[in-house]
Image (cartoon, helix red, strand yellow):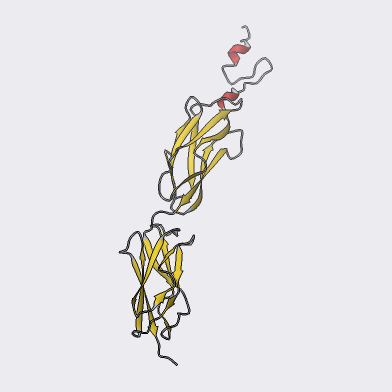
Length: 235
């Protein structure tokens, strides 16, 4: 019987004519790169404005279609939608990224299984997650102090502003007012710092033993914190 030609043996997994069968290199992913969506800024718990887009190339730097790409956000409470995408004819895959709830830098990895790379291929994008709007307004120091009338309390009055996830909110204005006792505060309004904190010094008045100061959010005056101090007798 005549020996089959090499062209026929190339269609099956057999050795022929001294050569071994190899898969076409373009069928294997060789690289994954970020096309769009890196270095965005967004709000915790919210989707970023732009999709994350990556491109997959084969070993000959040609677009690879039909390749599964897994989008894995870090931290775990973030979300990629969809989380797995097949590349299109241009080798591209895209997903929307919903940020996690912790303010600061976050990461999203586009992962591809590949026999040419141990652990697969990975492309990483980052985003800066800023705090959400003020949701929590609390006392953070200076409550229940005492001093003689007409003198400043030893510690400042401190409040903290947080978003719904407990992240500090910077740049929030707080208004301060003495509501009992006739004393005064060092500033009528202050602004929170990067830690979500702001403070004033309180000098007690001469009217009454129990004296109070109220702090209120400028954007939401109904949210207040009341500080109480005791005017003790002169020595």
